[in-house]
Length: 256
Image (cartoon, rainbow, N blue to C red; front, side, top):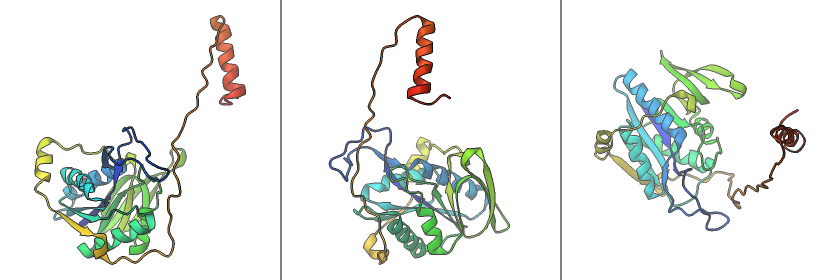
């Protein structure tokens, strides 16, 4: 089985991210693998243990330094990587077209795993666009996965704590949610071994991907500014409690 995992190189959400203008951040901050993609790679490694002769190929679209994210995927169990190198900022339409072309060029997939979204753009579209280009069925926010008799049985988490189970024919595309597994965190020997695994670098221009008829571009970004107005509450403990309840009911409106 050919298992492709699409991973994204994103800024570390725990880092102190600075904007250099209204469209770009300072990209000297630490970058890492998109956290949802960690679940996708972990599930791919689990599938490989279940299905003999499987191969895991991690695919990434990004700048040259995105190779570090592919190395992380290799340390977590992927067999090899493909980096489609570009300096352009790509929307979900272009990203899907490029990943689709890269997978076809590499040989074709039996199953494609992605994260359910990326923590930087939060578009939640790429997996659906990849599925449409391949004409593969797609589900997202997967919390369970079982492959039997050429079909994937996938449990997906919905809003309000509900779940829904789907049966998909293979090949298919699955967006991994946090409930799918606990990500593998590689050991030092895993990291050392990953350095010997191959990564093929392909320029985006080599794939001859035509531009999408539509596009989405970032016009501007504005940092989130949280305004707080501290207020001193005085009086007896009972008076302070009553004032807090009044504020929650009448001002914050979080209590009825």
